[in-house]
Amino acid sequence: MAIDHNNVDLSSLKINREIPREPSGSKTKYVVTSVILLALFGGYYFFKNSNFSFQAEEVEVATAIMTSPSQANAVLTSSGYVVAQRKASISSKATGRLENLYVIEGDVVKAGSIIGRIESNDVSANLQNATASLEVSKANLQNASAELEDAKLNLERQRRLSQSGATTSFDLTNSEARVKRAEAAVASAQASIKVSDATIRAAQVQVENTVIRAPFDGTVLNKNANVGEVITSLGGAVGSRGAVVTIADMTSLEVEADVSESNIERIKPDMQCEITLDAFPDKRYRGQVSKIIPTADRAKATVLTKIKFNDRDARVLPEMSAKVMFLKDNTSAESESAPPKLTIPSASVVSKNGKKVVYVLKNDIVTEVTIQTGETMGGAIEVVSGLSAGDKLVISPSDKLASGSAVKVKK
Image (tube, rainbow, N blue to C red):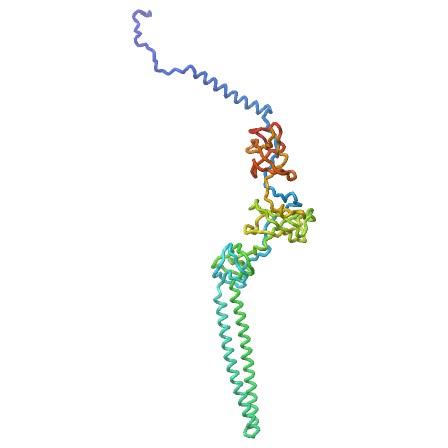
C-alpha cells in the first residue's frame, strides 16, 4: 500500500517540554562523590592492612603536690586511722523499755550526767514497799523498847517486895523472864530495821540501774536505740537493744598506724611525728609516738604503733584516715610548722629561651607552661607560680614536644 506523503496530517505531533531533564552537572557530582567514597574506603583498608600508623610519643607523668619541709627529715611514712583510746557503749544494768533519752549525736556529756531512763515502776514500787517495812520495824522497836522499860520497872518492884517478904519467888522469877523476853523483842526489832535498811538499799540500786549515766566526760558518737525499745544489759533477746549510745573521750584521740616489721626498729617511743588527715590535707598536726604495741600481726607482718596529738583541734574526729611521717630527732619545730609548698619532680623542668618550662598533660595533649621555681627539696623543686596542685606533668620531656602535641602515658 502506497502512502500519500502530500496529504499526511502532522498537526497531532508536538514536543512535550514539561518532562524534567536531568541537569548536566548532576552526573559530575555523582562521579566526584563516588570517587571520594572509594578513596576513603581504600585508605581505611590500606592503613588497616599495612601496619602503618601515627605513633604518639610515650611519656612518664608526675603530679604537682603540696609538700611540707619536714618531709625532707622523714624517716618513715605510714598510714592509719584516728582512734579514741577511751570509748564505751553505754547501756543500763536493768532490763526494760527505754522511757527517756536525753542526748543525740554530737552532744557533750559530763561524767555522772543522766543520758536516759528505762521504765522503773516495778522497782520503784519495791522501794516504796521496803521503805514502809522499815517504818513498821521502827514502830515495833519502839513498842519493844516500851515493853522492856515496863518489864524492868516491874522487876525492881518485885525485888523490893521479895526482900520484905511481901511477894513470892515465883512472881520474882516471872518478872525476870519478862525482862528477858522484852530484851529479845527489842533485839528482834533492831534486826528487822537492819533488814529493812538492806532491802531499801537493794531497791535503791534497782531503781538506779534504770538510770543510764555517762561513765566519763565525752561526746556522743552514735545513738543506738530509740524511746520505746526494750533495753537489756546483754542485748541477747530478739528485738532488744544492748547499747543505748556510744560515747568517746575526744581528749584521748590517737592515730593507730601499722609499721612493717622490717622498719619497726627505726621507730622509737616519744619520736616526733607529723600527722596529716586525708580530710584536711593542708593542715598538719604535730605528734609523737606514745606506744609501740609489743606484738606483731602475723597476717600483715606489721606492728601497731600509737601516735598522740601534741596539738589537736575540733576537726579531728574518730575513724578519720591519717598519714604519719616519723621524723628525725633533729627536726626543728620551725620546720614542722612551716607551711607546705607546691613541688614537682626536678626532671620535669626544662630550660627554653632562658625560661623554665614544663609540659602540662590534659586529655593526652601537652601544653607548654612557663613557671617560676624556688628552693630544691631533694629530688623535687618548689614551684612559686604557674602551676596548681594536682596538675599532671611530663617527666624528662623530649625536644620534640610542643604545645598541642599528642602523647601516650606509659603504663
